[in-house]
Length: 270
Image (cartoon, rainbow, N blue to C red):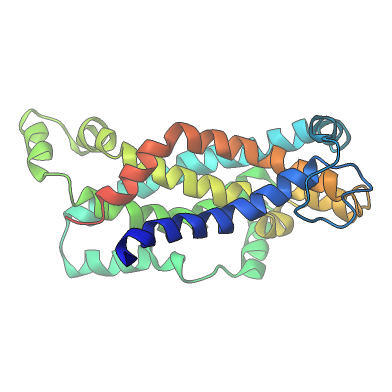
């Protein structure tokens, strides 16, 4: 009986942990200003969700903030995936002690937090403070370790005979990686993509210190309009903004969910 009840209990726990906060966001975003003064789980007497979303889209200038977020996220994800997968391929195929040390250094960024003050001062010395290039460089340095950690374990599951056959046919290292290894990395790269997108898309801490006030992203824009008093005590507009900000990530996850799941499980065992 306990074994039969365990899946039911797990599903109920997930429904509570995820469903309750999700309902709180949707219900509050659908309320009027008077009903949303004290956010709770009660449904709105009359739904104003579309009206609130439309007001937020116009008043908060979301299109400009959305463009700023895409300007940061898209190059960051592309560079991190390319450099991380190339480094992981080399680290996975070589078994020397130096490679082990380099791998440990490569994934050390997962547990070692970056020094924000040092990063900002370095960007100022390089003339990249307050620029999209500087912000992209910061994110690449922070999340490159995550990609190396994910991809290295996956590369070790790929038979080396495939690469040897390509070398016999005359393919060089870059051609082997581009034509043989990279297509096989699609599941784990899909997993890394959603993780990096999630981290960068929702980041406000590093963006505030590096590009705050110069380039508008969605989290920075929400922080600014809330701090300026535009949404002060207007929880229905704040939660409506959160919904709009989350829709692109939900779309990415809905498209890539199968590859994400396979990427998580494929590299678990060799």
